[in-house]
Image 1: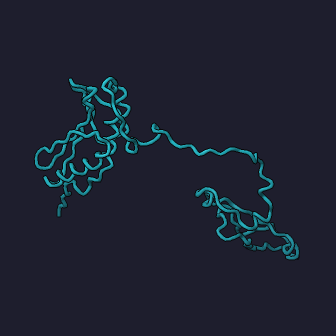
Image 2 (image 1 turned 90 degrees about the horizontal axis):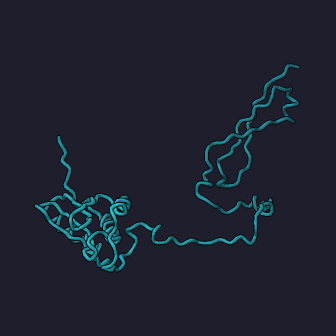
Length: 214
């Protein structure tokens, strides 16, 4: 009897929403006789990329998994202590921190300390003047009305801090802000906190309109 190659495909009853990581594919048994093909089936699986369920963290077990008693086979300690860690101030972004009272005896930030904090604010420049270090930021706006609106937004964003920047409306459409702590003759952490809060102010609707050339 001449041997013939049989090509069979099978599908397994996976639970709903099962992971697509392993799926059955078409089986290709070795060439055998027809009677042998009926009792000899070879299946193989292949990896199809990352497990989608795993990408979203933990999930509830499927009924079939519960019935298998898989949890009883997991190694671990039943008295493991779990702690929820609350981030301290240094782990929070500057914009989420509150300003603190500054003593006149407190030394201002050094140049190296100020340069390290400059990485946490956007668009600000570090000025080294005779009176000490300062932060400066400028915005070019659509018109005079937009400049006034930005100043109002800055005031609202910094009102609760009780540490206000020096604001200047220059020309018809430019606003300049400067920050420093006068009581210590330089910069303090409060200046960077206020600068980060100002960074979060929406200004896209106040920016000059882009010209569209035909």
